[in-house]
Image 1 (cartoon, rainbow, N blue to C red):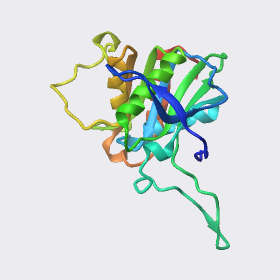
Image 2: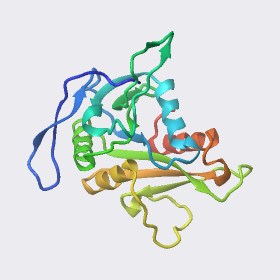
Image 3: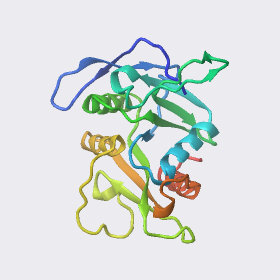
Length: 239
């Protein structure tokens, strides 16, 4: 989905700071909608087997949707790192397909609404972006947020795909194998958002699916299916 040339406006409120204007997003035709759950997947960090990417593409293509907000690519994305895509035919250049970040409202098979935040991972202004997303979610009635990602695992493709869950509190962790030791890692925007949203009052979880390490650089749809099934169980929406 190409970025639109829009005027940007919005408001944000950071922890311990007064509200200030923020030119980060433009409301869309679905700006009046409300939903209890947000799914977020922003492409650009680790995602073995394209598990999260394929899952969110399936959700966006399979259900009716309305645009709630379109974020400013110029404010958030380094175009030299994520260059716009264009085609050329007969030496004539087509329109560019710009990097985008968008919040959409989807309708499940029983008419219930859920939100999906998708597009490119921001290259800059992470704190402001996270605070703006939190404000949007409060305005639209969201209480639960969930991210999706694939990680390389030492398991063969002949075994069942497992999904582990992270959370902003121990109450959100299901019965699953204990984490061995302490893990320190560089954050993706989805992990950053999960941490931030948990700290400002949302129930925030992450779904991590294991992908056979020898398939980590290929599309692995079985992992995406497992993510969507876990998401349906968690959110009680019909996917």
